[in-house]
Image (cartoon, rainbow, N blue to C red; front, side, top):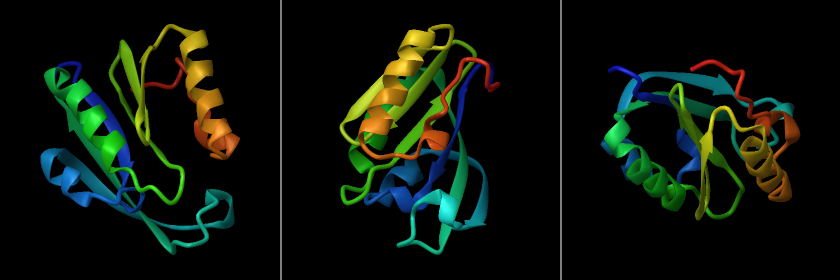
Length: 128
């Protein structure tokens, strides 16, 4: 799909997994949790690579924000060439991919929740 949004959703980050049924999943892989993931309550992450049509991006971001589990702080994200949605529980950042300031705001928010810095290394240079 031309300039659709692409991202990866960790299934274990969702308390409402029904949101996955609304997404186009391109591939799924399982990753064994290691200490640096900072999720010792889990043994694996199920990572779904997703594609989202442009016209569904905002609604999908809002749905994911409500579906993220409440007990731990997670984020989800997806992007196209112009925009990057960075989604936390009850908070969505719609970032212009050329704006270092907007990326820094999303990163600082993630850090304030206790998400490890290496996991919130959002950058306009990272390709879609």
